Image (cartoon, rainbow, N blue to C red; front, side, top):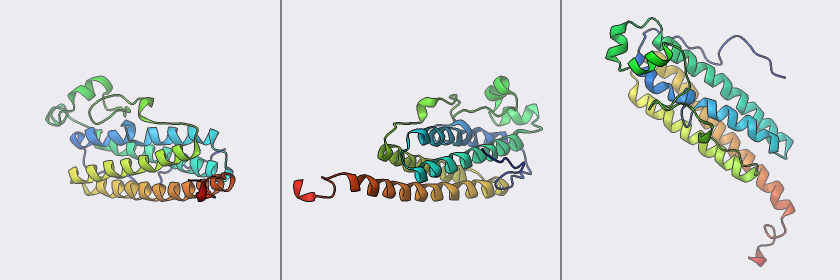
Length: 197
């Protein structure tokens, strides 16, 4: 059971519309390393996680990623509200506009629609947690790239917050991986008896 509060985890207040900026921020909504894939990855992996504390970690971070999805959607919405036809054309936003008007649609910055093929759920503790650490680093890199391209302080403030959370998630998954390895090593004769290597 989740409790939903009608406020974002971090405030999003974008003063100036900018569809050109929205075009590449969309990738963190539905791109290959975006928040949609992250939330579904972790909330799906939790079912095969044998350790309750790590199942809780996946649930917590997966739920937080849903909040991040909401924040990215708010950024895109605020950047594309009240666009004039001239602004749409100048930003090269016509193709998106024709298909989605100013709706927030999950896609890559390149325009490819979101696909579950960009995420992985293996059902193996070490594989999934290693995948999760890599996913958080890829998301951090994407936020770094957005910061390199954005000159909007309102957008950058939120992106920096989201980037920081990727770093924290990476650290938490690293702690989880170490705990999982300790639990697995305690049951693995060869892992605790290196003379057999």
